[in-house]
Amino acid sequence: MQVSGWKETAISLEKEYLFSSFEMAMLFMQQAAIRISEIDHHPEWSNVYNRVCVKLTTHDAGNRVTYKDRELAKILDEIFKEVDQRISLANQIYHDLLYFIEQMTILKEEIGFINKNSENYKSKTPNV
Image 1 (cartoon, rainbow, N blue to C red):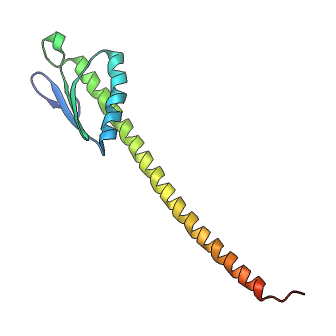
Image 2 (cartoon, rainbow, N blue to C red):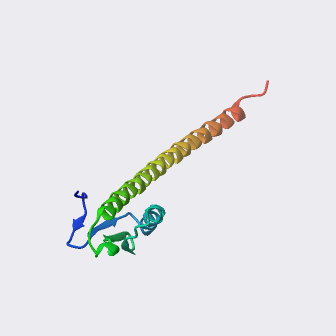
Image 3 (cartoon, rainbow, N blue to C red):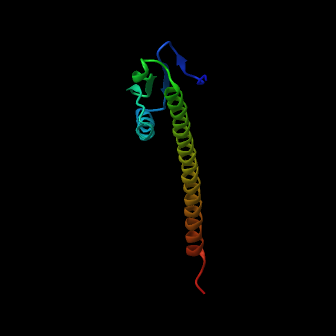
């Protein structure tokens, strides 16, 4: 069974994940750690800023690729997609908030203009 996007060597599956920031790389590793502990099959992995390099091999099977490695590879890919979706959603919310703030600023300026003009109108109107 082939695992998409993974480089397979004689003894391991390897992949590098790229993220938008160090924090997103850490989020991926934290989320993955939960699942890794559940299945009790631990990767060799490292993090440098926004990259996480993963190497999967089954040591107690003679340092070769087994079903456990392929399953963990799928799990890591799923977690990567989940983190990426969170980033996309956060970016969408951020842009929506910027648009909302922009619209509120315009509205505030329009209300200020209306109030200023109504005050000028009142001061020019004779009292009856």
